[in-house]
Image (cartoon, rainbow, N blue to C red; front, top):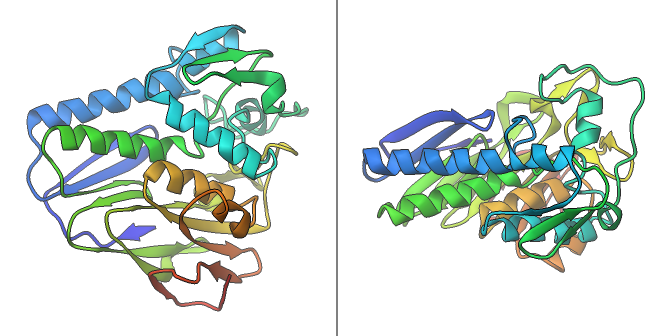
Length: 296
């Protein structure tokens, strides 16, 4: 997904395995830059399954009850809601399954000969709003919504430093704040030099999800927790919501659940592309699609 930026200057950097770009109407101060990078590192030290010193890695090693940061509640509660809305297909418990497929700490990309069943939420973890108790060994992976939530947290840091007009783009998870609308191109999942459409967002977030960016040996990272295997019916999704947390989580949920069922629980707009090339979108989508589509 590509955005047409209207602000400057830009602050570019790599974090949590992805390129970031932050456009603002004023230069970031040394203090605001330091604060946003500290916030990213704090998040990574909590949720990264690729770090030995993270809370998630500690949880995977030893069963018990773990205190999470105060801001963990929105992320884990969204996962709980989406787990229910997708009938268990979208789960934070796919960490071990991803490792067994080769998406592990060393990026071996070598699938294991045997694979474990992804445990169900109620048999593996219990969340009380501030503490997580593991009932069986569990390796959490919050990649389906975590990057979006981190975008929201970074925006909070910038607002605390009096930056109110901004576009935060974490490699396709985009949050816009400002009076001038932002036009965003929807990248074609089979040809990244093309777009399947353009949408306009203002004071909201848009997130994309597609398997083409993390694919290997006929596999990819978007797993159905019920089977432990990558999904293949849909090849790209986009979700527009009030927060990047919800937009990111819903973009993944659209691989597993019908939009109508998600709209019963969430307020958002959406686009999704099937492996057949067919594209569906929200009736009230603020944008234009260039390919054959079905208005749902």
